[in-house]
Amino acid sequence: NDNSFIASIINQLIAQTVYILPALLFITIIKTSWFKGKIGEFWININVKIRLDEKVYHLIKNVTLPTDDGSTQIDHIVVSVYGVFVIETKNMKGWIFGGERQRTWTQKLFKESYKFQNPLFQNYKHIQTLKSLLQLSNEEIHSVVAFTGESTFKTPMPENVTQGSGYIHYIKSKTCIIFYSISSLMFFYICSCITPLVAPKISVACIKKFLSNIYLLSI
Image 1: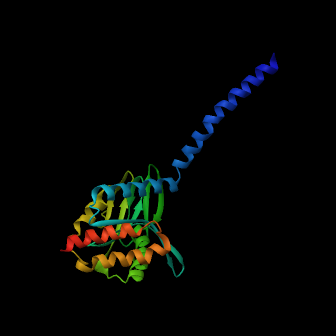
Image 2: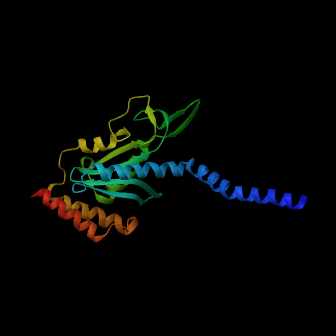
């Protein structure tokens, strides 16, 4: 009868909705800037672990440090005998226009243009906060901007603004040992400053492992 036919149609629609709604939710999530940022950070994590010697370089992720006007979030910090590298990640597509001293840069995606803060300026706050916390000199800390999406630079960029795996090459280009025999103490100091605030996952065993590796390099 008509009632059973209508009920059958409704049941089919409900059954399809069970699959359609999660799919729509997933599509919505992957298009968000939050998800794109997480993908970019994941790519950085994997590359650092695979392409940088863990005996020389140690990665600290997702660091939030207190500042005078609130807090600042740092995507990645790589600690090594060659200095401390502060990485700002940008997962973006399209053409990128900007200059070292320009306050805002432009992303051109098809016919649309979008303004965003100069990531060098953004990372400058991170650098200054970390320098103050750890009492580092300009020679001991390096600013790195890593674009991980399918983007193309349409204007000349400084060497520390990179695409793809370029940030790995930039980090490896710093071959002058800065910390020497006190590098182990520097790493311990960095961990002791950051760990109580924002990085509880850095364990004592992890610190001891890194310190022993640095010691072997210094003898």
